[in-house]
Length: 180
Length: 180
Image 1 (cartoon, each protein chain N blue to C red):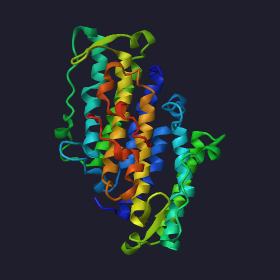
Image 2: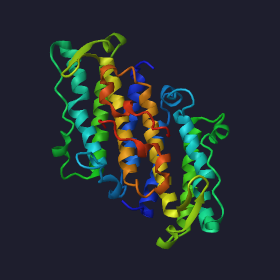
Image 3: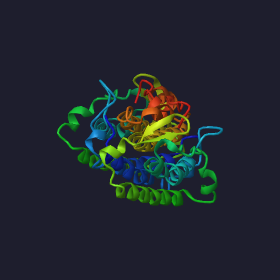
């Protein structure tokens, strides 16, 4: 389907509450384990989503509207959250994510983007011209990529425990596709 | 990690609220589209989870405790939900899932299973002897498999919309691994 701003906002609005319902006060055996060396645990994932709100999504929306293709976006640091998350609890991160997401969406709505605006272009440092519409669709799909990753990280912890059911559980076959 | 009954229950308790937060009143463009012929949409997934509560998980727990390996489980019909879901709204299914999950977990807790009980075995119609512990771990992993699938089904709808970001989004590379 084509990108639709209202559908994108509807999804972006729901992610913090969905993560909160799934992760708050869940035993740390689920939330602090990862899939192996250099992989994220669920704590990292929420930290990464917060970092994206601060440095990636709305900052890039603003850049498209202000500079078009004349200035490339800042590259996004996938591990940029590590320092910011240090010493915090998962509860704090979940609250923080809800807060920064609300701020982002308030700002996005206040822009009153029209269909013509969504075709405006910016410049990605790796692959060049992108439309505002593609950026916003990617923001929603990025939430889904991390929900997909979260479910896989947690399922990984029961890889042995499920015994002969492993081949019947799709999530157990998912290798992460070289990205989250 | 090894199977842990408290961890399993903690996860099983949270899934209905997580799905509710993600899916309730989301535009149908997200919830009624699937990934192509003979694939589930999110409406099917919630229906399938309800069907599993009624016919799969606790019924199999009971069978292990009552019959051990002397009687094989009923095979689980992956599309058994279709008739039951007909004419219902996604809101109704989300409420129903929360209700049947609560009933299942009340019954599970009331069994007061001890470590020794978790090693008791039953017989799966396809792959033979399985322990109660493996069945319970699979119940939790099955929730995660469908959360993984849900995020992929929804991301699929924006496959074109994200333009050049496709290769950077893990969920877009996930083919479903021949099972949900």
